[in-house]
Amino acid sequence: MEHMNHDDAMTGATLHKASTVTKEEAQHLTVGIAGMTCDHCANTVAKALIAVDGVFGVKVFLSENKAMIGADPAADVTVEKLAAAVAATDYKVTGVL
Image (cartoon, rainbow, N blue to C red):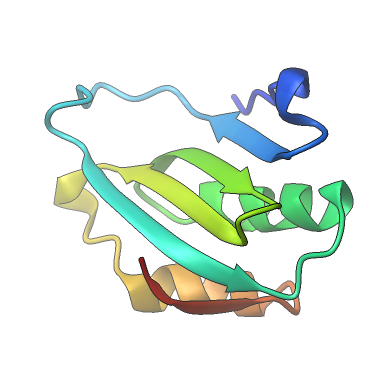
């Protein structure tokens, strides 16, 4: 189940899905995102990223044009998969930060 943290509404978006992976075991990725201009943009990017198989946590920072992703290391989440999901929403992953 997705959860939107409304405290982040002015700065971006945060989504989580249930996972058995601990914080220490998780794969952590931070990527740059181009094209976001508003909270709706950040929410769209967050929803695209959380839908990638193996991703269980996403925090999008609108003001910093970046997204932090938590993923199951066994799921083979790659920057290419994340970039494809974001590109499908007409935004762009600019690289790993």
